[in-house]
Length: 288
Image 1 (cartoon, one colour):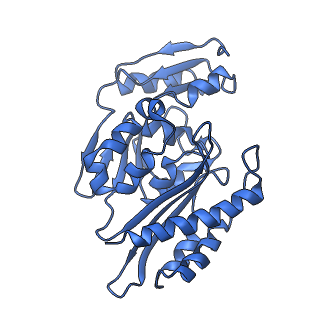
Image 2 (cartoon, rainbow, N blue to C red):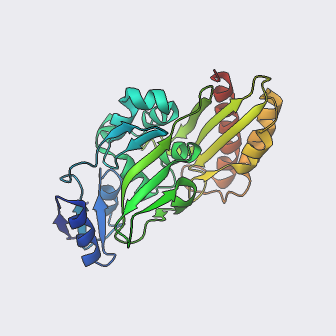
C-alpha cells in the first residue's frame, strides 16, 4: 500500500529536529530506522503530517564504554549492538537479544532508539533493557531529562516520551562479574517479533544463594514489564530446578495477557511461565 501524503524533513542538527517536531504539534513522528514506522504508514495505521528523519544528524550512532557500563547512541543499529565486542563483554544479554531481532535486513536498518521510542509490545530489546535497568537521556522538553527503563514503556506503542522529545542516549549499566544471563522467546515466524520473550539476569553468592535477579517479559501484555514477583521469590534461595519452577510461575502475576491470531491470552500465560523457567535455567548455568 501507499502511505497518505506527508512532508519529509531531514534536519542536520538535533535542535532543528526538535523545532520541526514542535511545529507540527503532535502530527509528526521521528524516523530512526523506519522498520516499524514505515510499514504502519503504508498500512495507514499511522497517518502523519510529517516525518522527521534523524539520519543526517551527526553523533547519534555510537557505542562507548563508560566507567559504569555503556553509552549507546539512539541511531545505533541492532547489528552494531549485536556485533560489538564492547557490548558482548560489558552487557552480553543486550548483544544476544539484538541478534534475535527480525532478520539481517531489519538489524542493519533498525535502531535501538527507534525500538525504544516506538514501544512495540512485542519488541525484543525493551526486555533486555528492562532487565539491565537501562536509562534513557531525552532532549526536546524544557530541559534534558532521564527516564528509567521501568518507566519508559507505558502501553502498546506508547512510551513516556512527550511530544517533541527525542532519545539522545541509552545508558546501560555493566553486568556484574559472575552474572548469568539469557533471552528466550517464541518468535512469530513471519515478523520474528516475540509472541512472548523473557530476559533474565541472576547472580549468586559463594554459597550458591541468589543475590540478585532481574526478569523482564515482552510480548505477553500491552507493554514490556519486570516480573518483580519472580525476582523477589528468587533472592536468598538456591537456584534449584524446583525454586526456578516456582519463581517462573510467578512471572505471570499482574500481566493483562494479549490475545490475537498468534496466541490466546491463556497461551501467552503458559508461554510466560515456561520461557521464564528456560531463561532462568540457562542464566543460572552461565553464572561464573
